[in-house]
Image (cartoon, rainbow, N blue to C red; front, side):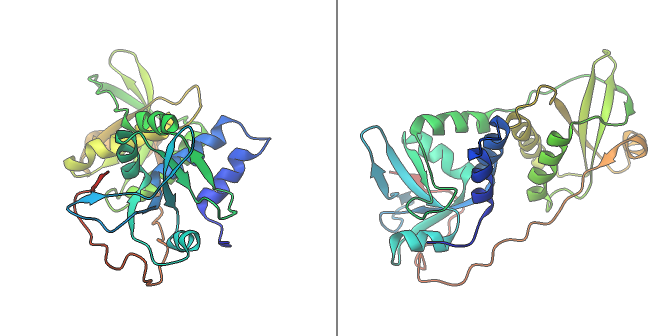
Length: 266
């Protein structure tokens, strides 16, 4: 049995609580997407193809993942090949093969769960949603009025991007068309990262069951006249560096070679 409580354990416990609704379940799924997971393999990767260890029920087949290496070792009881990927990278691979997902099975931990192939389809469809581009000129900025639950989720999500973003602000924007919207402004971000950041914000909002959660994403240079106005009325988004879990060297997966491209599942 694994004794250390992980973030997924905490969120799954909240999601299972009788006093909590859809919001807690969405937070669990969001964390599952962001967390590094260890996918148990049937054998070592060969020619770029990964063969996941599967369990089968009368209704579905499931790939096995764990949120720590020690939990994978507890499950197998010996040295086993694995593949370390974030949930975001695992989902499309499972969807393609019509597989479900078994998280931390048979370990007596709160995050133990089976997600069917239909659950995986639903979750991957959420992740794949892309934001729309808005072509409208901003005429003024004012103080933001983003609900706490949205603001808190943005802080948690964007801290994982702290290596790419040094400054960000929230505010309310008034457009030439008369449209008013909450905005999040990223400063001096590499253009190659724009799409990823916009998608990350869109993903946060998708996972929050809140009626008023539309936020526009804006990218500005540090010398922008807009930014001077935003700094006067806006609220800064704080980025907390994520402390990654220190993993003790293990015999598990020593032969696994790192690759720039995720292998295909078979």
